[in-house]
Length: 343
Ligand code: NAD
Ligand code: UFG
Image (cartoon, protein in one colour):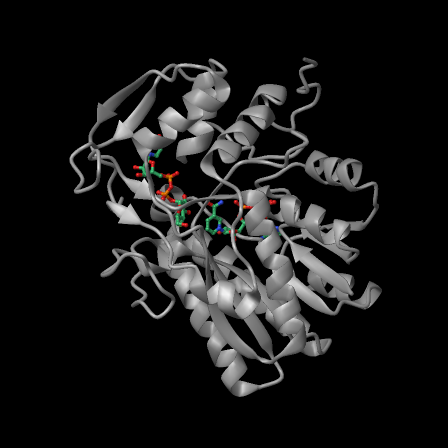
């Protein structure tokens, strides 16, 4: 099967490319490298020993999407491409709405034109907003709290409307919890631009000495130790979830949302401790004011994905920390040239 991967050079996309290639799929990547580097795709080739076509193009340019469909016999699409920083989305909401929503509409227009109606979409647990019940199941109310989250929520609605209009579509909405970790090779991983917003890349940058101290955003939440609790999931488990979703959309029509999480919650302090143990490095931290918009506790009920996709996350927090650290320590500057440090 030939699968188009939008945003395939990014963090989750590159790991999914590896899993797809290893499972025998033919893949084609479309990415504008706005938040990634072509080197990640070279590393995907290195890991898998398989080549694939890459198009540099923007989803906002319908012609460049169309070129990919004209030149290839695409049968399904996994759609990662988009902007993802919650804080930035508050500063530049129009760009987020334009890129995420218009980009998806243009992609779907071209898919429809070329009669490709199997789609796996990257949604996010952020669509749940402040959850009423924990663990969160897919039927919880959707109340995204940021422009970024609202783009995901709106896209989910658009895709549901698309299915209502044409029941040949088959769409999986994958609501990711908190992806961390990296491929065990240490060749691909998360390479954020500038100072990381997310916990794990911040910790790993403190560990290599790029940042001095971890700021923990609040310790008065109603949680086991007062710090925020999240459902951290290994990015390779997450990538494998896409293969299961792809099998599902290839075998039945409809539109369904699935939580991709482990079902376990870890506090910030527990993550710090797990990382210190895995890397054998002390992480200096200080408690600062809570971050605006953060919630206390968020973890998944992943049972629908288990039941309907046959997928369960397998990797534990120790492995997530070890793999994050291997990636960061071997690539202190991410994909920037000469960044591999020989050990
Ligand atoms: P990422 O930024 O590493 O990857 C996104 C990729 O899309 C990048 O390679 C970027 O260059 C590309 N891209 C962005 N806009 C594009 C456009 N207009 N045209 C073509 N390419 C474009 O992000 P990621 O962490 O791999 O996330 C992938 C998807 O999963 C995103 O849609 C994100 O919103 C969603 N998601 C991520 C997380 C997370 O914590 N990483 C959590 C929930 C959901
Ligand atoms: N945290 C810190 N210090 C930091 C960074 C984070 O204490 O420097 C804390 C946060 O307060 C939170 C936890 O660590 O309690 C996790 O924070 P992240 O920023 O890593 O992740 P979030 O849960 O806030 O958000 C992430 C993605 C969103 C996505 C959401 C749900 O950034 O895009 O998971 O999938 F929507």
